Amino acid sequence: MKNRIRADQEKTRNFHQYTVGEMASLLSMSAPTIRFYDSQGAVVPHRDQENQYRRYTVVDGNYLIKMKELKNIGASLQESVQLLNNVDFKEYCEGFRKLEEAEEKRLERQRLLLNGFRQKIQLLESLDSELNRITIQRRPAVWRMDHQIEDHFLTGEKTKAARTEWTDWMPAADLSFLFSKDDSDHHLHWGFAMEAEMAESLGLDRQDSVLSGRILCSHDLPD
Figure 1 (cartoon, helix red, strand yellow):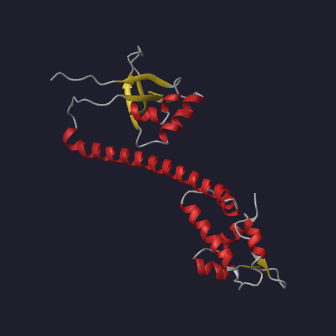
Figure 2 (figure 1 turned 90 degrees about the vertical axis):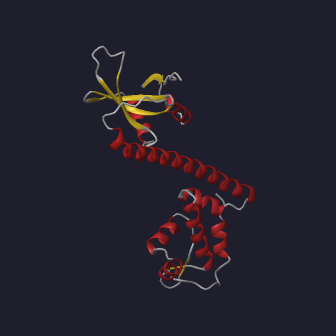
Figure 3 (figure 1 turned 45 degrees about the horizontal axis):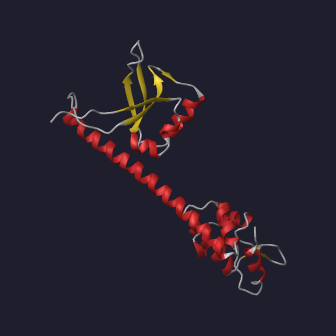
């Protein structure tokens, strides 16, 4: 890693210096947070010649502000320090490009979860009028994953991994149950379900060995 931060510290010896408390007050940050960033190399404060207390300059303050900016856009601590130290402009821009791509993925995930949340609200609001009624309607195909049969959780390692993956996508994924036609004892199978197109795009169909292995398709009703 290049050392732009340390190089800047060498240029600021004659700048006005602030205590950690003063800098915390000026930036509305806690002193422990500033000290933590210091320990990670995000700033390199001067040391008082007499007592070795940390002394910060406006340059340190601006690095701390940049740390807040990078945190706001999802950069890890390590990524932030690396970006701030990077003196290569092209690499600096590429670092921000990667953060942009990661943020877009995060926002898309939040959009999918929010849509699932809205669908759940819609379902709950319909219960008053639809309870104890059977409705036949067209619906998209869905993928299912069984994770429980009757009162027992399935315990295979692949099932456990898939259970974690599917629950990470709730409420876009939802709890589902069925009586499997392949189960001669007609046990109740509990699991998770998601529209097939979305599940496929998210890669949830990669757990082929623990998925039901079938897309449940609705059939068009006659006009």
